[in-house]
Length: 458
Ligand SMILES: [Zn+2]
Image (cartoon, rainbow, N blue to C red; front, top):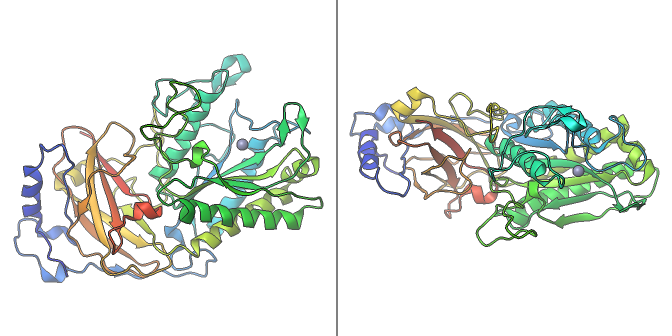
């Protein structure tokens, strides 16, 4: 068992490296009660493990509430209807209406199994603004969410789309969802020529750290689930297109130096705050075959698709060995809570700020829950670092160092609350980044479990 550093000593060590450009490193203890004492209390060496609550849920029965699924019903709002429907384009029969109805039905299925769900939208709205008087759209004002200096709706639709998708990614990231499913409907058409084909196709990016094993496998599960469900429902021929590694914005890996966009000088065709979790974009069907357009506008068709997505998610979670959920036990840091919308300009969702008393006390209570299917191996370790940033949250890990705290080898669904000592509050806005690493030192972030981030807001 690792010796615990008393908090008072930790504080001195951190103060000494406060001027260093590299992030300071908090250490942790299983109790906040060491302050002022140089002798750790042996009774505090092992924090109390809370047993998995257990349930009869079909989805992650050890502890379904600890699993957070982010559902993104594609498109929405006054301006963004999604693809044109060649057979109809009324408010009840548009891509944005189909995706919303499917998303809401999927939420119902997951919540009935005890799963926590966050939705990017629950009505016909947009997150990054929707105001364009010449088309009679008088929604909220535009926000430059991605931070490229531009906001609004222009001819190509590019600026609006990127800000909107970045806002949806931010929401999933700040909620630290286990996975993100973006729901879309395709239309197979070239110019005026409509290809009367019904097909399901699922996209993911294989270049994220968790790549094929994370997003790829999730994509294959989701694709199989939706194809099965629609095959049962459809009385017409379907020609499914399988999964494909195509880095559409919402599933893309992060922008990195050296990347180029198609348009010279453009540096925003990939997200600068990419999904920090496995993400797939499911084109669940296509409305360019009239029969499928009709089916996707019906309650039965939409419920069938939702059931297919549900089955894919269930199957994927049933085979995920190592995963963790962190809950900072402070306001806004808990499980699956939709982060509050920040008013004004810029990104609507930000990492939770540390309450003043927690920052002053220098001790952050964090609950860790094993959300994988395997017991954590002994040697699982907490890593932490911090980085100054004016962004909503950090997109890459700062320099990480081990936190001196014993992490029990939790069984699936079990949880434990540890107290993570914090370095003294910095002068500028700074984010703490906390993650587990497995017994070989691989951070769980590289397995697709987003890090816990909390912010000092001076
Ligand atoms: Zn779409």
